[in-house]
Length: 349
Ligand SMILES: *[C@@H]1O[C@H](CO)[C@@H](O)[C@H](O)[C@H]1NC(C)=O
Ligand SMILES: *[C@@H]1O[C@H](CO)[C@@H](O)[C@H](O)[C@H]1NC(C)=O
Image (cartoon, rainbow, N blue to C red; front, side, top):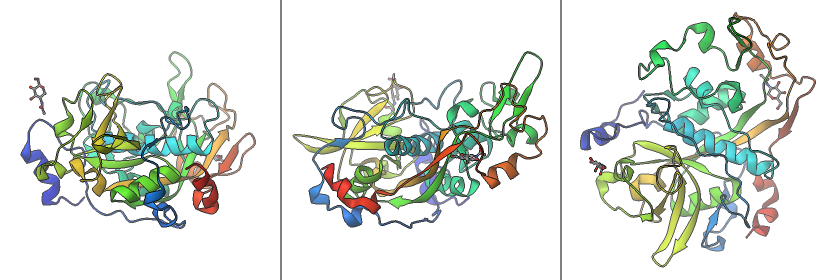
């Protein structure tokens, strides 16, 4: 972990908001396809576009609340996994109820951070290497990581056996919980960073929401409207959110941003931020990832998990994740990057 003076400053500037970005280092990129700003002209983009309303249809996954059942600084995992899940839903053309991804799996395996903070680009880089990310119902959110003693976290079993589980079932009273090693999942294909308003807009328009850092301090008591703040000090980022689109009003354009503080905060869990001046540091550092393969159907596991590696040992968890084999029942869909069909991207304009 690299602790730069930048990552210390926000904490010093105010005691009210503790930074949830503990790692500002460069996690590299894996870029194979053309980047959207290379094939979409900024001037061609509409004044308003949001994945929350594309011709009346929302492609967004549900809002989340990182702060319950107890405080957990998992914004980096929430923002990055929400944006990735949105991209799967966009690829699926919104067929059925959208899948969401297991943030607790990310926390259990310390993929990019813990309840004490992390980084979005670090999460995408580490998750790409770790392999299949399970859908949410594999291991639901507990708001705990092994280093957290907040609320009931001290009582959560983070022994190696449990922590190595990607997915679990607790089949009946007294039987305990067991590992499941075959589960619907998504893998990451490419990942990288993008900055500058026009580039971020092209990325969102072509491929879907992105995860970006912001300074959350000035937003703690936000109650709606387009937020504007140009203080230099407020550009030091300490929180990660996902940006789902943009809109415009008489004063210009603004970003439409999904936070992870519940629907009771802000505008139904979202906020709007004036575009173009790197407000709150947001346009400076956004991360994106594309799906590689996502499960459209499952390998059918028994309720007790017996046919899916259901033992109380940690024996084959990792080997199963690595082999990622083709099993009966699974249909995995290969993601096609929009750069392979630029005309279809332009048809949406
Ligand atoms: C938010 O409002 C509370 C209650 O008025 C106040 O104590 C707190 O300082 C405010 N926080 C910010 C960042 O303005
Ligand atoms: C992940 O899903 C794919 C299909 O999308 C499947 O082939 C693979 O076996 C799954 N991995 C695990 C660990 O279940």
